[in-house]
Every structure is written in structure tokens, then in C-alpha cells.
Length: 427
Image (cartoon, rainbow, N blue to C red; front, side, top):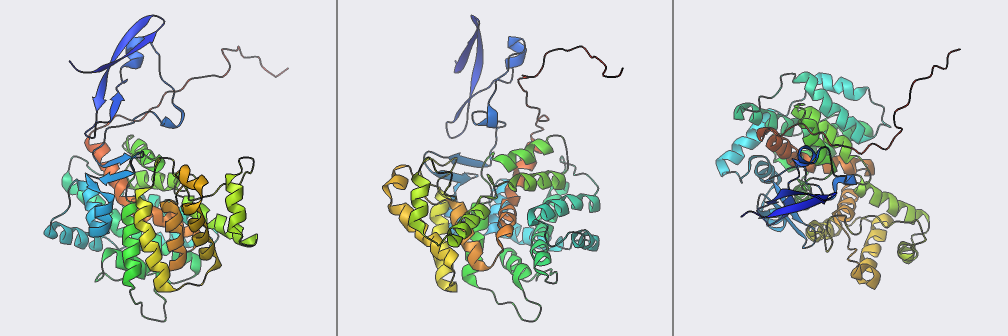
């Protein structure tokens, strides 16, 4: 007999089935709750205890510090895979063969040209515009240049849409940064790998050749992989719920970018650097700010330490810390901000207060350090996060549409005025 959960309301008992995930996760299926109880719903602000879907893409165990994409550990993928392999895995379910990967990369490169009219839209933005707002707008604008909706029942149509956005999105990212810096827009070089081309598009100066730095390529490849998916977070849930209305892929991705923009989500790595800047302006005394972080009466919050989901350690942080050390050693950057970051890291890893509470540096802390050292502007950090998260969003959107999930429509508990009769204010 299958396991069940029993809910009792005013003496009346109702049984609901238990759903098991492949990693022995348990969930109570309450999809029939309103129907069988005559209108009773649940309330769960922030959906911390509510599963919005079943998914075969990412497994996350925050207590044990486990993160896997399609069954592959994040540690193994970051060490052995390149970003396009991981993108293919997340979107289509399995790692590509060598032939599939070559075709995937070729098809992406063949779709990397962005309509010149997109440049006109970009030109309309002032340099002061936040890059995330620009990126969200440009991604949404792609819909106008690709008006035909995706036939989700056609694997060919679905594939064409995937390679199209994977080809154009890095161009939009690079253009967004170069526009802000007053540099000419660049399409990069199709003879390069996907990650190498991203770096060239972003950093090539018009009066000199661009020389690839393998340590930076490796670090960016790891960062993109580590950010590629993270289960049903705010932006991913947004992509799925927007897509559930049968909105197109580009429109759904644009909504995910907007959700990621928030400082409690993708903006966290930007918040880390802003915090470090504030500490520098106040004299750079890390011990003072560690004490402030431990003082419950002090409003100061130490950004980039601990994680909402990971209760032990962030497995991504362990991986990217090594890459951060390699980047800093290779570039030899003299930067007081990075010195402050290293000081905070050293003290937090040794301070009993942080160790006992498992408030270790997380992926946002180290990614901010790497991006700073690479010369990426602070307000571009979240854009880089979006670049990494792109295949996860695509995979989640594709899964949701192929499973023909119903349109998202959360309930609410109304607590406003009860019925009032209208009285005109006119004399």
C-alpha cells in the first residue's frame, strides 16, 4: 500500500498521497486539496515548503552540500567538462557525444549574428543604464526579430531556438559591457571556443590583438558551469511560470533576467563588492567589520558568507576558491579591495563564531573577487551570472513545456475589506 498523509480539519480527515523523488525526497501531493475540502488551501510565503513541479534536471541537498546536474556531481563537471557540454547536458538530458558537441557548437556559431536593428535599441540606452536592465530589454527584443513561436512538439524547432539564443546571448552580454565602456561592439571570432570567444568579445581593445589567458578561460568556464542551474530558485521559477502561459522562450528568459537582477538573488556578488568598497572607504579595518557582523544589534550584514540553501557549505565555493587563488596569483593584481576580501576570508575561516555557524564564504564571494580581478565592472557581475544560468533556464523551460505543465496560478488568502456598498462622493 502506498504511503499517505492525513490532514484533519474540523474533525474531517483527508488523505493525500506521498510522492517520492529519485533521491528519496518526500512530498505530499495536495493538488486535490481544494476540491476535496471544499475550498481549503495552504499558505506558504516564499514557497519554502512547496514544490512547484517535478524536475529531472538538478538535485540539491543543502544539508549535505550536494549539487548535481542530471546526476553528475558539480565537482566532477567543473573539473572535467567545458561549459557547452554542461549546457547540452542540462538542456537535453545527457552529455553530448563528440559529434553532437561539434555540431552543437557549430550551430551556435552559425546563429551568433544579431540583427543590426538590435544595435539601434542598444544605442537608445544611456551609458548610465544598469546592464541588467539593458540585457533584459535586448533579450526581450529578440522576440520581435524572431516572431514565430516555437513548436514545442517539434524537436527540430526546439533545437533551433536553443542554439539561436545560445549564439546571440553572449553577444548581447559583451555589447552591454562595451556600450557602457564606450568601446566598439565586437562579434568575436568563430574560430575560438565558446568561453574563449566570450572573453575576446568583452575585452578586445580596438588598437591591439587579444591574447587569451588560459587561467582566465579556465576560471570563467568553471564559474559559468557552477552557475548553470540551481533547482527552483527565484529566477528559474519565474522562467517556468512565465513559460507556463505559453510565452515564448526569449520572453521567458527575459523575465528570468529581471528576477535575477535582485540583490537577494543574482545581485549578491555585486553586493559583495559594494560591501568591500564601503569597508575600504571606512579605512579597511576587517576586524572592525567582523565584529560588527557578530553584533546582533548592528545592522551591518556580511555579504557573501553563508547561504540560504546550503546549511553546511556551498560546494561551488570550494571549487571556485581554487580558481580565484589561481587568477589572483597569475594576474598579480594590486588592489586594496581584493586585499580586504582575502582578509575577511582568512578571518571568517578561523573565527569560531563563523565556523560554528558554518558561515563560510559562498560562490558569490569568490565570483565577485574573480570578476573584479578580470576587470569586469561591478554592475556587470549579475550579467555574468545570467550568462552562466542561461542553459539552466532553457532546460527548465523546455522541460516544463514538454511535460505540458498547467499554467502557474498560485492561490492567496484574502485579508482585505469584506463587502461594502458603494456610496458616491458626488453631491
